[in-house]
Length: 78
Image (cartoon, rainbow, N blue to C red):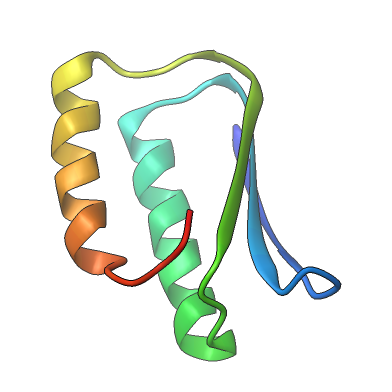
């Protein structure tokens, strides 16, 4: 998977590392993982490192995904 989600206990954050070509499906899988960790661990911060990503979906899918994320992750620091 082009995005790897881990828990950084030392920083108390959920860390997402993106690399390669990222698809809308990758975004959705990552969101599902983050939501599961939020529920299980109660962490409220997410650190995203996308410096190794080479491409993303077009603007409209990203906008739609962002709208969904804004509702689901209300109160989360990214």
